[in-house]
Length: 64
Image (cartoon, rainbow, N blue to C red):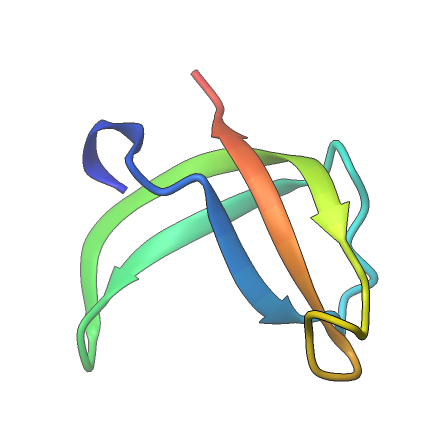
């Protein structure tokens, strides 16, 4: 998420995500590359019309 380009992500909701949660996103391309950022969840889309059962779309902002 270099430069804050990534604004959302679809994830299986096995952690019961909540608005305000902080996530640590780590760069992965078959192995962890060492770079990471922290983001705060700002919105959660939980609608089975658009997503598979159990999945949510998390919107987030970069934690400075």
